[in-house]
Image (cartoon, rainbow, N blue to C red):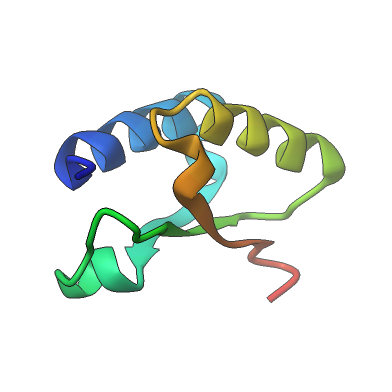
Length: 83
């Protein structure tokens, strides 16, 4: 099973390195958040920037794809302004 603590620490580092102070929130929801994850569970990310453009989405997608188990990552991406 995915080591959640290492995975979230790694992606958080990459996100902060790329987006810095523009990040308003990054978190996990779903089965990993509830402590109910299994081998089949996906990783439900929530990622909120100050505002969100197409370039931001491309950069975020590249970060997720660089992660181990990237195929399991899904979730919600938005800009704070768009919420």
